[in-house]
Length: 406
Image 1 (cartoon, rainbow, N blue to C red):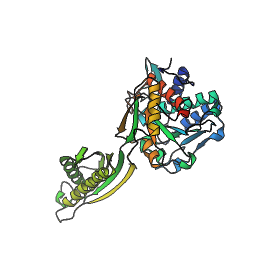
Image 2 (cartoon, rainbow, N blue to C red):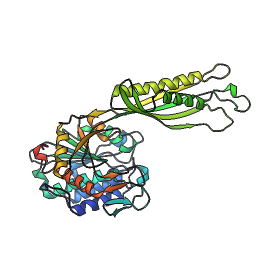
Image 3 (cartoon, rainbow, N blue to C red):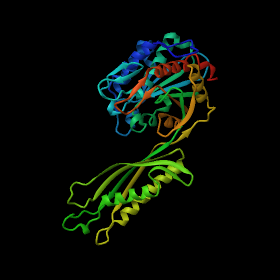
Image 4 (spheres, one colour):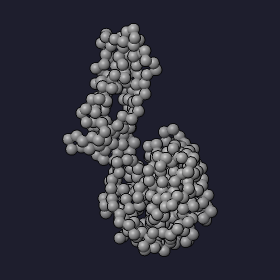
């Protein structure tokens, strides 16, 4: 296989080796909280390529994430003595559960899993592209390039936990940053929405549903009234209110043990998203208000009402980089160099870049050719992936000293 580059940088990845690297890395099980085997494989390949183990560390993020895990974020420092900006490349190691057991196989111009699972290109393709760039740089003589840092995150798929709990002191100062994740190569995601997760517990009053239902207050009825009210007033699904835009969803409802009992407890999980933090907060407030009202309105015959226990936490704050930000212009230049026309957009989902921004690292996200992610139909577009390898390589070798000009 050959690269699609029209203007090849001085360091050009071996396409067959890059694809083999992806196939090997993607076959390793590594759902969220279980990324250690993936990290060990990455480390082994870097050491084999000549990197000193002292340049590799874990940051202990698994001791700070909700639910723990079997390893932390993997951080690799490529010192270099050349002139130019210090560059960070990042990707996440974990996959969603449907990808465990993936057996990647080349099928024409794409890679798929022959085992009936998801492929896991989200995001082993990002990890493999960065690993390829590092191996090519090491092979070319790392010391002649500007310094770079590579970060392989854990637990992205369960709330960006790895990036949230990154030990920034192990990263150091970064001049520009590039996060390799989902989509096509030419898509430059320079901003993303903010998300807030909501936990609701409605407590009703139990009673025998056949003998004395009037003595109870059903938590299911409370939930139904609140959801119907939010939907009727336009506060669920796509939300457009008074010039503000966002989304809201009630995604999980759990409650009830028997049909002959007026249900005393319902647990719900919901979310709100918006590129505008104030709008996201307003959506959360409307959700809380609707459930509080429903809990108070549903009563037993003696007047006793239900109650609501409400909790929420911000998964990630929104951000947006200016189109002329050094990370964005450098990414655009790299995309053009492989013969593609870049375009920018803001994502309606969270990215590791959301938390990097909060940590003071302003990253643009590039795609690696993943298609139909989080499903059994997931594939990897090989040409996109090889161009992502080329872009990652250029950003920490030839393109590094230019500072990202066009």
